[in-house]
Length: 381
Image (cartoon, rainbow, N blue to C red; front, side):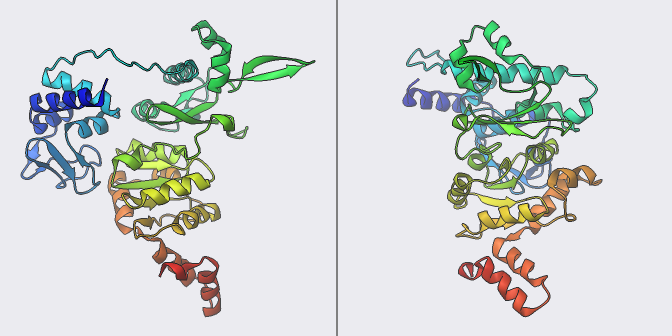
């Protein structure tokens, strides 16, 4: 489909669609209460979600905004093209099937998507003895949105039965070659009963992290040649939201999403130079709220991102006790989780202020100055 034709489709659907309020009410059951919706359908807070005319919305709490297609992308966790199709159904518009330069995904990408679908279905159906450790209290909706799966084993044979070639399966990263006596053959790369956390961006699989729910085996990822350099878990958040929570791990992110907060992304282990570069570029359009683990590694990640900060758009969340991470903190919290996340966001401080506070906890003036010198705080003043 040409860009011009696609733009025509968006304009046609927008013109024929019911008022945005009617669509929001139809999809969420929420109604206007004075100048605001009952509550924001994304962050759950009240007195903050307003409509501008019949086609624009904005939440002054979680700072999402846009038109009908932006709303559908957020509400349905879908791409813009998928939002167009949903909007067309709501508007009663039949979109013309455009035959043109249809670009089918390469076979190895389709093989990866097929394998992930197998793993997600296995997770949905899983009732084994480790069910609690596998699910960790996360909602089925969150697992579906993030394509989380459980490896059933034998993915190589399953993909072969679906008609994928050995070359495509190997290139997908779901199989690897094992050699003996000068000969090699394909074997499964991912072990049975491992949780699969795929990182997508714009429909492509950038990376997959695999973890043992029993924590007896170390976590591992796709072979390096298959990875994207700046892969983040839910990287789309940096494109969609004006303010984004940045956490370390997959379960930190999933737990935050369980409570209806979608403006979150994760670094997936040790932060890379490519990730730091990406985050430094995004800080001019997006406020980064660093919610790292309460340990030395977490403080190190804060400094790696903070040192690249050229604006006040990098802030740090302080919370809980030493050793906590966002997942365990929220799991133990007994109040209104959304309200608590919002409180932490509001109380986040610029990186410079956070670093000065760290220095202030030291005993002597010499120690404080040495701390500020060590982390080159003076250049940010």
